[in-house]
Image (cartoon, rainbow, N blue to C red):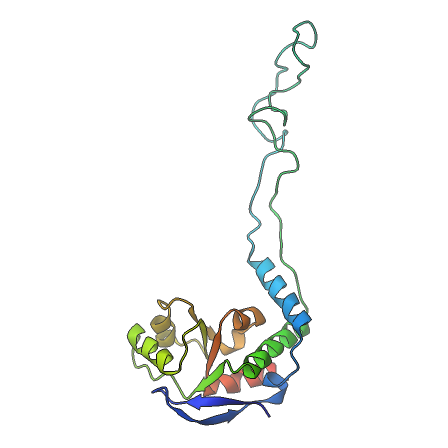
Amino acid sequence: MPKAPLYNAQGEMIGEVTLSDAVFGAEVNEALLHQAVVAFRARQRQGTQSTKGRSEVSGGGRKPWRQKGTGLARAGSIRSPLWRGGGIVFGPKPRDFSLDLPKAVRRKALVSALSAKVKDGDLLVVEGFGLEAPKTRAMLDLLARLDVNDTALLVTPETDRTVMLSARNLPGVDTERAADLNAYTVLAHGKLVLTREAVAKVEEVFGS
């Protein structure tokens, strides 16, 4: 059974937490993680870039000069792609870059990412963050006592406004609800800090 260190709200190690094999002890599938990361990043692309073809740019309705006798090359429109201000050939158009992965694949990728964090010793469990009011300094001090000097993802069982407001001004530190975890956000942070209740929630949601 995989285990993770357990800390109190003062950042002192008070024991270990036994984790579910189904969620935190699975085999790490790097190919599946790659698919999940590529799909997540593809969904973040807006796909709103756009250019105008020769039929969309304004002007160019009249032939600029007669076909023969001027000594100039033949031209039918001043909005030809060969002209300055003309249409763009094969330019980008709005499109949807999103890649869909089956729900089961996304779940297996998340389990693989969580298991990788446990194996690398980058998953910590806290009894609670112990914050009565939003305070960035208190959160910074707690993370320092937990030896979290890298980027970190703080996971709570439900949306915790106090934790979110305390961490939002810390560079590289993000918060997430347990049920909203995905493989990309887990892998994108150096440390994963979950409350004890968040661990139970993750095992409940993703363990089946």
